[in-house]
Length: 67
Image: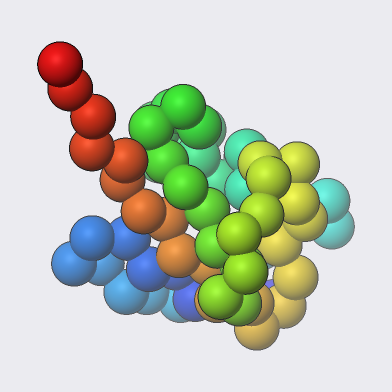
């Protein structure tokens, strides 16, 4: 079982390691903070507790902020 990950210039198929693999698990794997990333699953905004399913397209968008 796999899904498509899009992040910056990266676009790759990744394996789903377990049945309840979430956006939060993916962010932890990539060492990214949920506070600086917006997540989309198949084009829809989702929260970090969302489970990733087979053939999903997951897009991670870096939030730019500053003062």
